[in-house]
Image (cartoon, rainbow, N blue to C red):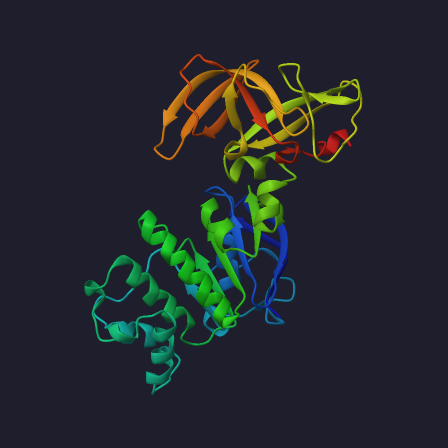
Length: 358
């Protein structure tokens, strides 16, 4: 039955941290809470875990209400049957790997933990390291010990609070793939908290974007990246350019006066201005006199304002009639060069009208 959060409110003293947010996590689903620091994502996770008492709303885990202020229901964290992996590994230095993993079971009064611990360590690929001390493990191995400890009791829910932030970039990539594999193998609903867009996009079935204690938008990673409905989401997830388009003469026009074709025809009101999202990696840079197939590419005239050589590509900042657009390209141009910024109609996304304008 997963997790159901309904109108969750959290107030610290006189400051409201969560403003009545609601979402669900289905059985076997991996959902990420994504947002900047202070947006309320970790507070949400801690409320689900029972580490924070809510100020309002209802939290259900596997069909059981575990928190409801109005009905005076609060189920203690150790009774919620969940596993949690923290940002800090919280590995006991005086215990072996096996003893660390067994600890939650020992606290519950289980005497023979060998089978459960062996299973958990095999799942995370550490079966051969059961007798080692934490000081003999790498950072990635310690993180997997924390994960084994979280799953050893076969929980109904898995919670992750920025578990990869202490790992280096290469190890972080490998570990997130491992977490995804284990979660899918166990088919346990999971809530993952991060401010890292790469983690959110690569691991999640669904991403919930948060800001200032509210849910801004939610959806599948590809949809949020390619077709966001809010400027905040477009700006927070990935490298985005924002291009102001004006509607006139039955077409949308860019700041340089060029008509811009869209894959999905959207008619506006004469003089109406809308923002369009253009991802940096799909923007092409060509010589100003290059021949452009008008039926398949949009082309805006600009000037190279700045450039950075990144090895696999060059990052360009291009001035298009006072608007700076970022582009990633293998083509080489000098600073100050006149160029054409090109992109396909299907690669530019027009944001919806602001609510006040609808």
